[in-house]
Image (cartoon, rainbow, N blue to C red; front, side, top):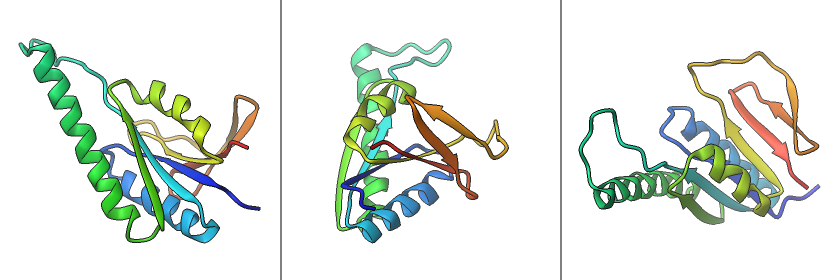
Length: 139
């Protein structure tokens, strides 16, 4: 079994580093391209007075920070890496970008832990790993 591309969801959750390391190790093991992906919506905090340009700059800064963190971890392990990001909610960005991957590594929020189970996304199985990461074979 081979995977041409493995994608990992990147965010500011503390578990994100472990997901990147897991995905990078899999990419190295399978000789795959490792793709990091993140979304950051253009949302104002309640009561915040900020221009649209400043809001976009803040989102761009956050996405750059996530990309730099991804590359720092991934390039230590994986041979080939690529970064994708968008100023939108991760729930919108990740499924759209997942088309470029054979395997998707995602995580869950610490605030809503789940028990082990398998679900189906677009007729593909999604499995929970012991470290709270998820993986989904897309092809």
